[in-house]
Amino acid sequence: MKKIPYLKPGSKVAIVAPARKVKPNEMLFAINWLKEHGFVPVYDDRLYSIDHIFAGSDEFRAAVMQEYMDNDDIDAIWFARAGYGCIRIIDKLDFSHFLSHPKWIIGFSDATVFHGKLSRLGCPSLHASMPFFLEHKTPEALQSLYDALTGSTLYYEFPTHPLNRFGEVEGEIVGGNLSVMYGMMGSDTFPETDGKILFIEDVDEYIYHIDRMMHALKRAGILSHLKALVVGGLTQIHDNTDPFGKTVEEVIAEAVSDYDYPLCFGFPAGHFSDNRSIVFGQKVKLVLDKDNSHFSLAI
Image (cartoon, rainbow, N blue to C red; front, side):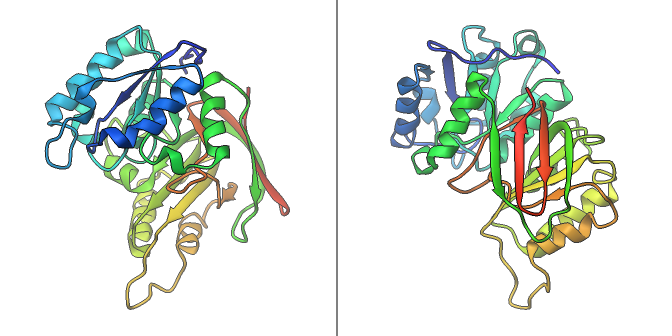
C-alpha cells in the first residue's frame, strides 16, 4: 500500500464536486473549517456548476477531477457531497500521475467508487464526512477527520450489539456504502476483500433491498474469506406494508451466519451526525467483547 503524506499547516485541500451539484452557502462551513485548522481551501466557480442534478456534465466533472488529481501542489481532494455520479466518471480518469504523487481523497457514500478503485491500485483513502452538512456533524466526527488527515491515532469505543460475534482481529479495512458496492460488483472498482476487514453502511433502503444485496455478495464469494465484517450506520431503513419479518441487522447477520469471523454492528460511521473517519487501505485493530467494542488505527 502506498504512503500518502499527512497534512500540515499550509497544506492545500481542493474541494471538488464529482457527483451532485452544490450551492456556495452549503460549502461555507467546510471552507472556514479548513482555514481554522491551518489548511488552504482550493476551489473556483466550477465547483458550483449545474447540469440537472449533477455538478456539470460527466466530461466536465471528470476534467475538473483530473486536473486536481494531476496537480502536485494539491495535498488532498475533498468531495463536496455525495448523491450520485462518481460511477459515471471513474472510467474517464487516468490515475497514472496520481499514483506517482498520491494524495488523500476524502468522502463517503457515493465516493465508495473511488475508495474501491484506489484500493485496487494500492492507495489508501479516507472515508469521512464531507463539506455538505459538515456543520451538523458531532465534535467527535470533526476531530476524527482532523486526526486522520494529520496522522494522529484513531481510537473509537462504542457499545456492543446483541448480534455481534466477539473476537479480536487486525487487518486492512476496505469497503463503503453497500448499495454503491453492489453496483460495482464484477468491475475493477470493487475492492479485494479476501483477508480484509469489510466495512459497510447504507441509507434510505428497504430491508429486502439489503437482503438482496447481502445475498448477492455472498453468492459472489465476497463474504467468504473476510477477517471481519463491520457494519456502520443503517439509517432511514424502510420496511414494506407487508413486513419482511426480520430487522435489517438480522438480515445481515443471517447472510454471514455460515462464517465464523467477528461481526460488528453499530460502528460510528455512516449517514448520521457522528460519522467517524476510517482510513481505508491501512491496518486497523478491531476488538469485540461482551462489554464494549474498540476500533483503532494500527500505527
